[in-house]
Image (tube, rainbow, N blue to C red):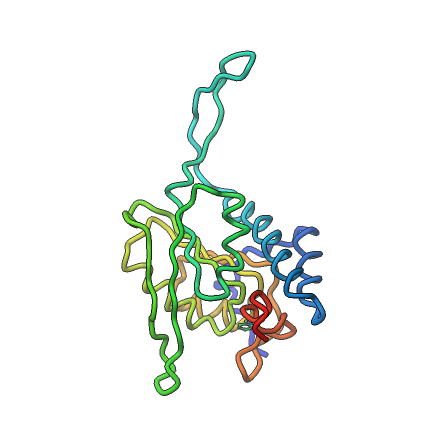
Length: 217
Ligand code: URA
């Protein structure tokens, strides 16, 4: 078991709202069906989005209610991009898009070369004008952190205004790796689990998130 670097821990926002924790516990159970796992992930992602967007800038807009004119606050969702790390990231997308339906979506696909152990990109598709956008990268499991850090490195080539990382679960290894590579990236998670297994699984974790979302076990 390794320790979390205190500086790295300061970048992690642990979302401990009872609704989030309740749904996460249901998802962890090994007998949760594909159907309920997917539904819970969608609900949880939507709830977690509230924390991710807590500091989102708003603009004053004048509107007419049925009774009078008032100044309300509005966000510009089009400036946001959710970037899903394939394939499990797509399980979070649905939930966050329910909350911010105007956001743009990008996808990044990486696999680990078995010889070099380096992340190799096989898919990269982003909206235009990335320099004007704030990115939230989504992936349920921040485990070794290697592919997540590689994804962020690649996204920085697009020079976005900011990058945040939203996951369901992480562990000390993932937090430390991300901080070492990208100390500017804030991580939002529902849990920091104990450790990574020798096979790269988060313990106690919830198993293979992609398989559980898609029923491919
Ligand atoms: N990816 C998963 O889906 N599960 C883990 O525990 C680690 C990485």
